[in-house]
Length: 519
Image 1 (cartoon, helix red, strand yellow):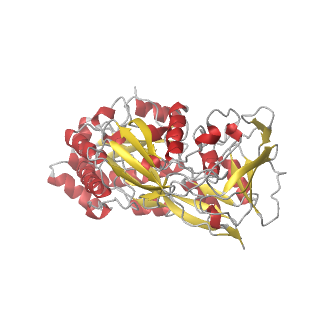
Image 2 (cartoon, helix red, strand yellow):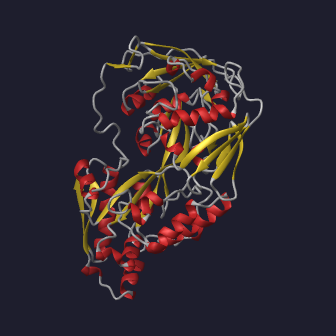
């Protein structure tokens, strides 16, 4: 049986199914307690303080942390080696450059010279090596555990040069280096350092107590921020985050999934909208004889009215995409792919040319019933297929049953989601060895696809990777193991008087905090 996948639930009714927040949560230090936000919490009405929210931290060490909301706040304190741009290119940050060896087994990273930690000590390659040591010992659910994928070792060649060795050529390696680094001289052998931060960012931790955390401006590598203080409210869940922002208790909300627009579309606030890597798609059970027929899958593709789905269900907060490559990414080959625009006549023509009758096809579309967007999407697709003569039903099940049916391969077609990591490695979704017992949930097994995926994963330059990825995309469009609906949009929402928050790096929504200011 397959390991469970965490399907990302697109919730169109805000806060549906959320549990009640507890009154108190304990932090790593048992002598201090951080209370969660409640209706009595008030934002300090001063323009020298910005208010944010996050979960209760077990640690303030970014490499040991296991929570993404805490990670976002820690990015105010700790700068990463690289950032990933909105178009998903690798952007130098603390690092100056990277280069692969001719065999692709070693990646050399060069640091910018003259960089200093907040305590004035120089930032060196030994700090990067130490940071990788910490990641290696971190828990499997730590935010940056993926960084060491395929690594076999690392060493600092000199103060500004780090060499990282890999088991095989790995095109995603530079993307995996968008992680924060920590100072070896401060953290090594210091058992109290988890809540005693020294970073390279705009802020540093000043205090934490029953009301939350306070960060104060620091001399980071990009200067001192204009807003001298940040107040961090401790929240228990996304519902609390949304309510805090709606009530004006916080100034920034990073709403990663597409449910933000149903609540904040009319609110007077700043909106920096960006395309996430949350991919929504229709997946065939390719192990069934019915779906080995390309003409049938092409007919289904022609019967997916993306325009109606994206405008009517997702309120245009989704970027249409046939393949699991974000169309806003610079490596996308969307302009060279078949469009499969909604056309029921073309669907019928495709079937007739293959000597197939639509009346011979009966199947169901599996969805989880707590996701109203998926349920409505399935209904639209089923109605379109039924209009051309097929017999298609919607099989709406509770989430746990939905997961179990996919894991046990007891489905015809499902609508699901995947949170894809930057770097364009599609092997987990489509490699033959990941079918049936892995993360290839559409059970697609194809030698040519394996060859193309491997070539893309081993490309050593952005140009070579883009070319190889284009071949993968075109083969997906030809074989249709799955049919994409699109990539959800997220947004960084800000209070009306907060200025300077722009479209973020996809890897860091708080990347330009040094220039934020209040009117």
